[in-house]
Image (tube, rainbow, N blue to C red):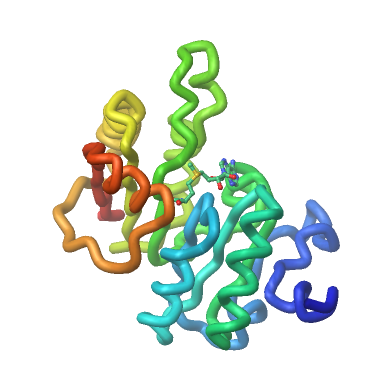
Length: 200
Ligand SMILES: C[S@@+](CC[C@H](N)C(=O)[O-])C[C@H]1O[C@@H](n2cnc3c(N)ncnc32)[C@H](O)[C@@H]1O
């Protein structure tokens, strides 16, 4: 894969100045279709399948591990998808500094690193600060999709999002491809914890 073809689906985050960091989705995708964001895409199984299934939505995949991003990016190129962009970033910073308010139709967060040791809990993605950013950036009726195999982290997530006055838990049908971790945990016979929240 040439460097050019590798670049063309990546957001030029490095070139964006802090002062004009907010992303204009219409410029980025060339249309004003709704935008869904997956955080921690791994090898991109869910994202690529979702972009295929929903050609009338745009998708941004955030991942900080380049080795996974390259695999996901190659899959998007092979599938000839024009509605996907990738960004290599810390999702916390990307959401806080680059996403406009009331702009995101859905966040998908599947099997975020659980950081099981108590002294590492501060490294977890999902905390009260992150919740504020989800509340700020989700559009009305927008959804946050969460899944994990880690019960204690799930309970912590439910506490964080359960205290929101803007997001409410809803039941929803789960569609789409299983992520790599999801498949692995199902094969291992583990329980999967899931919840969807909707922006009122
Ligand atoms: C346990 S894996 C799950 C991957 C995928 N969602 C799945 O279910 O197969 C967590 C992923 O999130 C990425 N990740 C963790 N924290 C991140 C952050 N703050 N910003 C971007 N990516 C992150 C990791 O590199 C890893 O690929």
